[in-house]
Image (tube, rainbow, N blue to C red; front, side):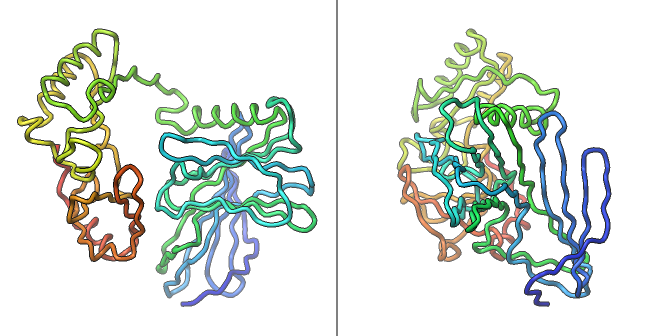
Length: 368
C-alpha cells in the first residue's frame, strides 16, 4: 500500500508519571501515530519520540520519519554549536551564525561516530563568558544512521528536527506492527554553554548510564598497549597484570595484537580469533590469571559490534565482528571504502536481505 503522506488529527492523550502520550490518527487510513513526551524533572530535559502503528490490513513502507522538532522564537543572533572530528582528533567544537537556510548534521555510516556527533547547542548571541546567556541544546539517542536539521526561515524562526536519516531509509510496516523512533532530547539553560553542558551531563549520569541513578564508580583501568604495542604474548601480559594489580588497577585490558596475524596495523583487523603463536593455550589462562589477581579482564575488539565490517588487503572475505559470519565480496558491491588507519572499511546496509539472513541463522560464538 502506498501512503504519500499523513494528515493527522488528535484522538486522545494520556499522562502517566512523567510521560505524556498524544495519540493522532490519519484522516483517511487506519494509521495511528503516538507522540511520546518524557520529562526529567531534575534537569528539565525533555525527550520526544514517535510511534507509528499500522492498523490497516495491508503493509506499507515508511521512507522518512523523525523523532521530534524543536522550535525557537524568531531571532537574528543565534549561534549554532556542534562537534566534528576524526581519529586522534575527536570533539572539535564548530560554531557558526544561523542565517535563513538549512544546516544538515548527519551520519550515513550506519553508526554514530566522531566525524559528526548527534548533538547541538544554540546560543542567543555570542557571549564572552560560557556561564552567561540563553542556550538551547539537544542530542539524539540513536547509534545508527541519523540526521539533525537546523532550519532558519525568512522570518528568522529556527526549527531543529532530528531522527533517522532519510538517506537509504526504508522500513516495511506489516499490519499490526509498529515502529518507534529514537528519542530526541532537548533542554534549556540560562547559564550559558557551561550550564547547558552541566545539565546534559547530569541528566546522562542520573538517567541513562548503566545502574543510574545509583551508578558505580568506574574501575581503575590498566591498558597494556603503551607497554607492548602489538608484541603481546601470554607470559608478557601476565607479568604486566601482576604490575597492574600491585598499583591498584581494577580492570586489565589487552588492547591489540592478540588476534589473527596482527603484528602491525596492516593486517588482521577483522580476524577475531586468538593468534595461536602468541597464545597457544588461548586466552583462558591469562583471563584466569587476571581474575586471580582480583581484576576484571577485557580485550578491546571483543566489544566491537556488527555495524561495521572491516577487512584489510590481506583478507579475501569479510567477517562480522563477534559472530564470525562470512560475507563474500560480491555482497559488498555497493559498499563504500575508507582507507583510514590502513584499513578498508565497508559500511554495509544491514537491511540487505543477505546480511539479515546471515545474522538470523548464525549461532556460532566468537572464538575466544
